[in-house]
Length: 442
Ligand code: PXG
Image (cartoon, rainbow, N blue to C red):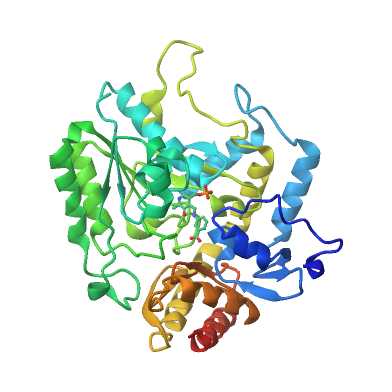
């Protein structure tokens, strides 16, 4: 292990998140630096960043405009108390985000992560109904295979078994789940949105009938499910969810932590899909992953409903020491400047067509069970090795690094979401490298 750093690093104390710690420590992979669409490991291997970090660095690494904004900010104002005070950049960033959001969604609450954003959105939903005298509306509806981070609210509405099972004792009690929308029999190798599956939204009517609409506060879904392996919404599905929520006075929350800020070829998936929710959770790309930040955008009416109570009284008992941190705001303003001035949302849309063409050329490669894509995101689902599920995904990840591509695997699904600054040649090169990896797998 002496070659990974000089002097040798003690790997014992650090407990890695969502990682096989014992395996990692037997074969550590340490990143030394990043530039544009590439990361370099301490052993000198250079890899194309196929998932833009963890979906969070669409502008590539160390973008000079973001680096310089953060450097200046830390020298000028490193922290400002978040309660009872503000600073100019936090207002500027909120207005900027409101300008990018669907019209009418113009009030922004800041958190430090997607998980905190999700829990904040759920709290806003409860507080909103209470403020309107509808305090019975406490139930939350999530969806199978949904990922909404790891807070107590997020794992309760989330639908990934392993993330919930051990912790149900802490979970929010009043939760139900819609079925997920993935059915390979109907949508294998679909390009973009599947035409089958809109009817799955009707399950919300069944849930409403079961619990009564008057007990349901909100439905939360990722417009495109990311973490579980890029599950694309069937045509008409989200429209129908919207219609049912509106009819029953239920708030619709889109968790756009992955899809927000250009990933699907529009500022938000809400705009790409033409469905406007009541709240949008964001994180990741808002600061290009440079400083942690998340948040919630809500319709003005939801915000205004909470602006009640005695003069000088706090209206919403919620917030974080680092809500709207000056460094995050500086990184956010600079990142959104770059996104706009370099037309990177259109670039993402254009590269999405390149990725679609390229990734579907893998359909006949060994082990490939499905290929799907939406915007500048795609998944290649592998058939699990007999008796050893997840091993193929894991091996693809390991071999990818040697082949110059940093892949992200979840079980046997490989997800791709390259930076918006990628060239079409880099996208094709990524896919050709992946083809080589697939052919090398057993
Ligand atoms: N909601 C969604 C939809 C997410 O994708 C979160 C909330 C939580 O965000 P924080 O910032 O608390 O991690 C996420 C996070 C992957 C991957 O490989 C996805 C996420 C995180 C790490 C890896 O798909 N999504």
